[in-house]
Image (cartoon, rainbow, N blue to C red; front, side, top):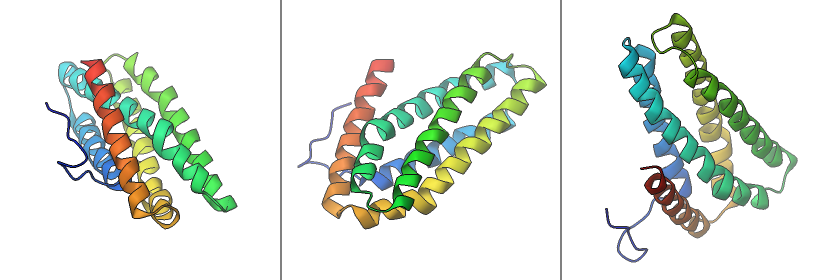
Length: 161
C-alpha cells in the first residue's frame, strides 16, 4: 500500500483517527465475546492484541504528550494520568488472557473483563479527553497530530507483518 502524502490525501484529525480505532477494536471485542471455538478465539485475540498494542503506543508516544503539554487545568492533567493508568491495566490483563486456554470458560470470563476495561477507557476518552483536546488544540494541531498518528501506526503495523 502506498503511503499518502499530506498534499494528496486528507488525513483525519487525531480525535477522528483514535475514535475509528476504538470502533474497530470494539467490533473485534464483540466478536471475541461471542466466539465459541478455540481457533476463532485465538485468531481474534491475535488481532485485538495487535490493534490494542499499536493504538496504545501511538497514543502514548504522540497524542498523550500533546494533550499533556496543552493541559492547563488540574482536571486536564488528571485525564492524562487516568488514561495512562488505564493503559497500564490493559497491559496487565491482555498478557494474562493470552496465557489462558482458549477453549476454557476462564478465557471467556477474562475476555469479558478485557472488553469491559477497554470499552470503559474508550468511552472516557471519547466523552472527556477528546472534547477537551478539541478545546485545547487548534484544528491545525489536531490535523498535524492525525498525520503523525497515522504515519506511526502505519510504520508499527508494517513492522509487525
